[in-house]
View 1: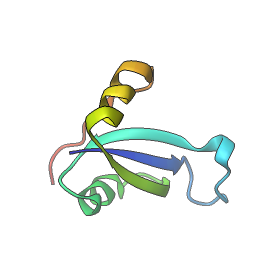
View 2 (view 1 turned 180 degrees about the vertical axis):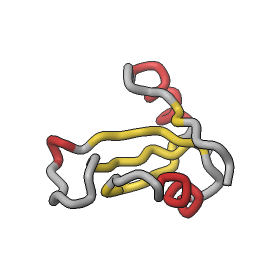
View 3 (view 1 turned 120 degrees about the vertical axis):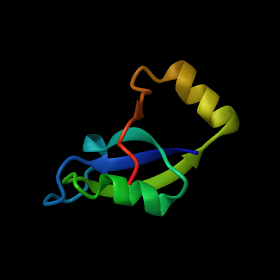
Length: 73
């Protein structure tokens, strides 16, 4: 599954919508996504599965769309 992660780059600041970034990552569950990202200093706001029409839209219309590759655990 492909997950879209909304995050702030540092965990020591309060979340501000204008600074929210997104990344895409392949994993089996939200728990696995969090495990893969635990080494990074991100303040994760929200994680959602994207599939079907939503995934197609992101692939075609989001210039930032790239699935982050992190080695398996």
